Image (cartoon, rainbow, N blue to C red):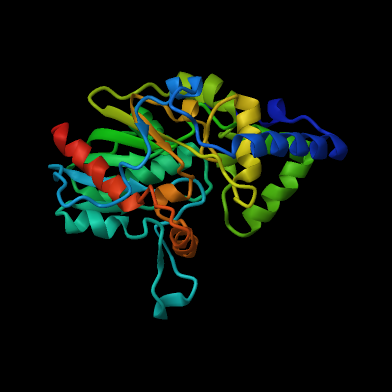
Length: 326
């Protein structure tokens, strides 16, 4: 059994100390965000293949993998959100991505898992969902930590998983999770927040499992890769503006982990299995096609060119799987 490590990661900090720390982070971020990483920057050595504008547009041709692709959302995700009830169209988590894959002749299954449950709970639900929907087929999965746990400990019945591709997944935890627990302080304060979430029917097991201590000393040590399954991974790196929603989290991770990140997960933490490369200038929200279209409209008015299209990226993953014979 994996034991939570919340108590071990808590450390109260005075408010003045936190304010000073944030000011320090933001000042350092401001200096770093004025330019993109240069080709001779030594940090690029950890990037593997550098992907800058390869997925700016959708190509005319992509090869089609032989087998079904399973898409499973990450923390706080959903398959479809219906804010307006049954009379209005739902909001798709994989906005435009499932349709694009289907149009290329790829069978796609979207698996829903608890949005904030523990990795173990999410893995069990994922295994049940795949067993029910895949009906004994060979599949390729695009998911995260819950899929890793499922493959290692809970193989779904009558289904063979050929590959797992993870995208900006915190395989070694996130320094921002550490920072948030440290900032909240005493365990009783965390318990109050958890009580509110549980009142609204949300699980809370996932959050402490995102710490670096938990992932490195508990999860990875007890979750070996499954034999017969290929593991692929991608990372992302962003230098956000002062107005970005990722401004603070990016600075925290950069300070505590000392490396590039997408605002939530560092490049180093994203590496697992065969590392396919680092998407440069891409945020965590860009990766699931949730970037605000209005932002890109005004960006293009200034003459700037959009360098990343999430749909093109997922079509290329399918193309990669096809070329791998999967």
